[in-house]
Amino acid sequence: MILDILQLREFHHISLLGAGGKSTLRTILEAESARLGEARTFQEIGASDGRCLMLYAPGTLVLPPETDCAVIVVGLGALDWPIQEVCAGFNLKREFTAEPARPCDEQDLLSIVQDTLQTVALPKERVRVLLNQADTGALHIRASGLLRSLQNDGIHAAALSLLA
Image 1 (cartoon, one colour):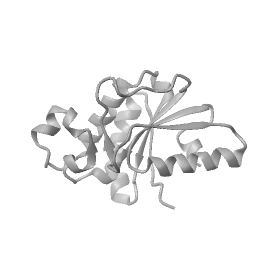
Image 2 (cartoon, helix red, strand yellow; image 1 turned 180 degrees about the vertical axis):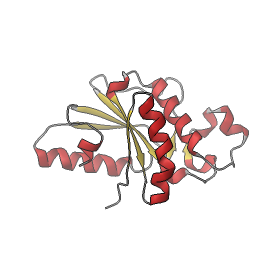
Image 3 (cartoon, helix red, strand yellow; image 1 turned 60 degrees about the horizontal axis):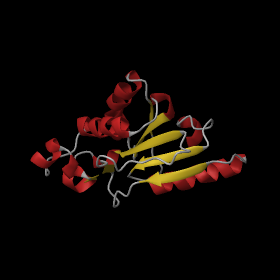
Image 4 (cartoon, helix red, strand yellow; image 1 turned 90 degrees about the vertical axis):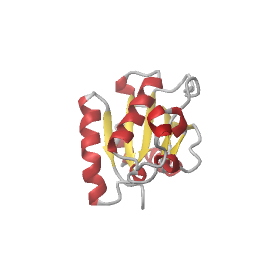
C-alpha cells in the first residue's frame, strides 16, 4: 500500500506537489484511505501541464494551512529527455535556461527536489518524496542514488511505479 510505503498513515491533510502521475497518486491514496475507513484529504498543489517535473516560482507554493504532510512527486520518466520538455517552470532555474535542450539527469531531479524542499514550510519529518515512474529495473537503479541522497538528508523517499 502506498500509504505505508510513503509512511502517510499518521497524516490527515496531505498536499501533493509536482507532476508525473500525481492525479493517479491522489486517486490511489483516496481509494486506500476509503478501504481502510480512515479519513484523509489530498490536495494537489500546482499544475505541471502533464510534465514529469515541476519548479515553483517564489511565492507560488502555498500549502493549505491544515497541511500536515507534503509529498513531492518527481517523474523518473524525465530522465534523458530535454529539460525544457519535461519540467514545468524550467525557466525559473538559470542552469536549465542556459541549456534547455540538454537531457535531464539524476542531478537535475535532485536539484528540483531540493529547490522544492526549500520552498515547503514544513519540517523534514513531514515531507515525503515519491520518485514515480520507476517502471523498469534500469530506472530503479538510476533512482537508487537519489534515494540515498534524500535519505541521508533525513527525507523519507521511495521509488515506485503507479502503473496498475
